[in-house]
Structure formats: C-alpha cells, structure tokens
Image 1 (cartoon, rainbow, N blue to C red):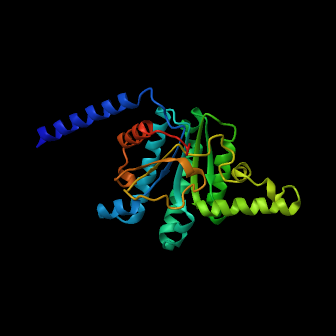
Image 2: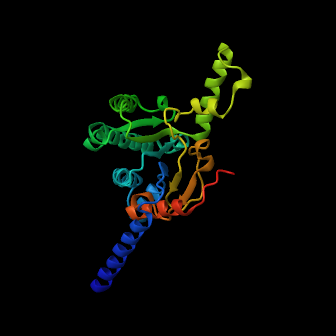
Image 3: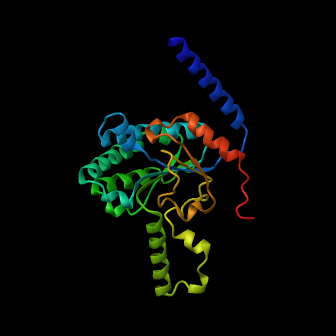
Length: 260
C-alpha cells in the first residue's frame, strides 16, 4: 500500500512538473476571478459544521494569492459573499462576518501585501456589512491605495445585478443634474460607474469556479461578458496549485476572438 502511495505521489509530481512546463512562457491571464464555492459541502463531507468549512476556505485563499503572485497574475477578484447570502441563518452569517474581519485584519498587517504592493478593494454594497467590518475595509483600502503592482478585489455583499442597478442609479442622478445626456450613455459610461471602475483591466480573462457547478451565480455579470470559464470539480477548501495550473493551461489553449 505504501509503495502504491509513493508511486501515486511520484506520478502526481511528474504531472505537476509537466503542467508547469506547458504553461511556462505562455500567455498568462492578467486578471482572474474565482467563485469560492463548496465550503459547506466540504464541511459536511468531513462531518464538520459549516463554519469550519468557511475557515478552511479562508486559509485556501491565502495559498491562492501566493500562487497567483508566483505566476505574476496582476489582478484577482474573489467572490466571497453575495447579496443573496444574507438569507442564510443569522448564526452562519455572523460567523462569516467574523472570518472576513479576521482575514482583512491579516491582510492589513501582511508583509506579503505590502512587499508586493497589493492594492486591496472590497466590491459590493458594503454599507450592508457590520460597522467593524466596514471600518476594516476602509483601513485596508486606505493603507494600499497607492499600490499598483497587484490588485486584490474581495466581493462582499456583492451581486452582479446589484452592481448594474447601482451604476444605473448613479447615471440617472447625473442625467437629473444635467451633467449627462441620455444619448451619451454607452459602454464606457456604464463601466465608469461599476465597482471595478478604478481598474485598467476590470474584465477577468479567466473565471474559475470550484465544486463543479456550471453557473456564474450573479458574479461580475457585466465584466464577464467575454471571460473564459474553467470549472473545477473539487470543493474550494480542496483547491490545489495544480488546479490553478490546469485552469491556466486551458486558458492558454483557447482562441479568444471576443465575438470577432
């Protein structure tokens, strides 16, 4: 049995080395979005409570960022908590907010963030979040506002439809104030009012979703119009570097025509 395990590990290492050779020197995605799906199901499969799955998922995010830095992927947008997630039990939502507070506080103090000049932004209707979490968001964004080497977006209290509605309301206010004419509304005007307007490349080249589900679930609906999508059939806490490498290789093998 031990010999078989060692043999399997050897094959795994060879496959991982082969994958890295495949993607090395290829076209890297500049911006990836990740739908972090499957924390609760992972917990159930290990006879744990849901919150333990969320904590495991948060630890996996730290590893993901390290891998992305190593591949020089400039921007990462994480789908952490949707507007629909507020309908979960009060206990689970409360525990999730504690996780986000802990995670943002760690990011704020992280040498990795500051040494790599990572700009942090939280996307969503942040006023719906607890006051303490809002304060941490403000601190993290303020502390990294002048960084521009890497970009980390955390989508909290986020919904793609909500984002488009918020942008439309802002545009309507400009029309009401007389600073914009309806005929002037175009894609550039809409993009200027989205949560990602601060970015030079707001559209993810690649969106990865874990847990095997084939849907966007209200994630970056405007920005994802031409994103390549890669589905990984593992729960988020089990996501490995080799899964990221597989996603990158798939991205590199696709012909991106953008409708042309």
